[in-house]
Length: 105
Length: 318
Image (cartoon, rainbow over all chains, first blue to last red; front, top):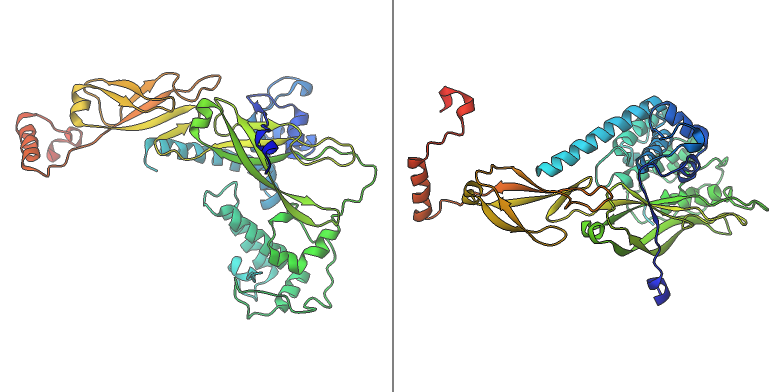
């Protein structure tokens, strides 16, 4: 690595709540908008905003959409099953985090 | 190159039926799926499993693999015998997985080159935006408190001019913004895969996770510290110096504090737009009764304090 690489610092943008458009979410998951819409219909992710052009998604939606994509691809789970799996996994995660703060882990 | 025992990976005998292979894969895939499993090596196990299934589910590849013979041991140094796959015809469709980089050298040596050639990107005149890419990075809690610049190394598979997959490594210096929390993403525009033709590059999404900290635990934007205190500090109250990620503070312990009491320092958690709180959790430590003096103090407490911690258990246990 030369000194130029060391000096170049990339500054990104933090994805706050509700900051991705439908197009950005599709690109971030490399998936067609139809599939994202079917996730919304199943209640797996929820956009803010009334109109599809005004839809905004959070960073958490990005995590869920990408997990859903992997679960569908790797385990051939249907959307209802993915919704259930993601909800249960999130519950387990938050329980694990609580156990950790209680100092028993 | 090491020999891989795909039957052993899937816990099957060499005589397993195609149905058994499918069932074993489903079961193990659920167990080791990186989204589901919390086992440390889940991702490596899942990749290994995917590779084994890729071969064994396909009767052509399985037959070719079996041809190598049953005498190989997993991990043994392996060189494919000359013309080992003579007479086997692989009808393309080799990869169901799109992250070809997931496969081992062993797999690539046996099935790789043929399968990859079909991936060739000879399209002319196509201008497509590059794919967005994703990576998870681990930072220290302090980086979020103060902001930081971190050097991260990323590796991503790339298809070269010959249509072969190569893993490309690169280093990036990135700015960690103050107040970022675990699970949030930083988007770096134009740092994803390059586009084809004059298409733009994709974006790079970095998901933030915190390294385990020796002192603090983090829940969303709140930070927790276990603070050991003596019984008399808890009982009589005290002023104690405690560490926080922003430096030490003097903390007043109220008298008659209990084991596990939480003291909150509002706004001293992660400095996010809505800042978190800093919690001190009191852990009362008992001095050992290992000297005559210490024993005497405990004896005195026994005689002079009217204290029964088992009141709730009922009269029988008192």
